Length: 110
Length: 110
DNA sequence: TATGGTGCTTACCTTTTAGTTAGAAATATT
DNA sequence: AATATTTCTAACTAAAAGGTAAGCACCATA
Image (cartoon, rainbow over all chains, first blue to last red; front, side, top):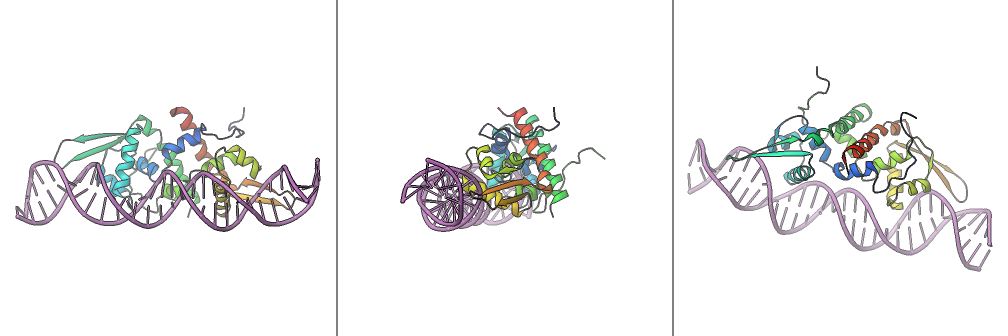
């Protein structure tokens, strides 16, 4: 058996690449996961860590990621509010994807 | 030095993850690269290999990928036409990205 | 009384992306 | 003469994604 199996299968809706892309393919999704990384991070920090993202997109994506169990959220009943985000076990498994994109970018793109 | 450096840098427009995503983040882009893989493949085959993609998106993406030097294209002056697509050296370097998405999908998604 | 901090929501609008449909080019086959 | 084949183009439409801007809640401090 070859190390890397050659692709001879059609990529229909059940293709694992396609399924991954459905969840992670958004413009900001992997970037957010990458920034959270192994940290416990607050909403505001995250916002500063991703210059250019709008608040709307950031919470929208965060909510989606929480819903999809990539991220967990902890809100403290304080004033002013404090909310911390962390990657779940599943979320941590996406880090290699971001890493490889980072590597590819560093090695091959201007 | 840790094996994986913790992310403490803001992801601005120059972030390598972001640059990679700009080129590869489209709905069909990585899927097309994944299907071409190490093959020499014709337009029609590719179309059948990716059920659901429209002809417009397929050639649009292929043209972009050729422009970005991920894919090379060879047209034979025959009737009916025959056009073959292959990954360039650069294109081959994207395969690990698709592979890791495939693995992630297989291991973690329904 | 006004202002600030923090996390978020909402309504609206623009841009981007994607899908649909029709067809062209050129030759071989029926 | 009509039809099929293959790759690709163009015009149009629809849907998805993303951006802008305003504001709310609640308490603290100025």
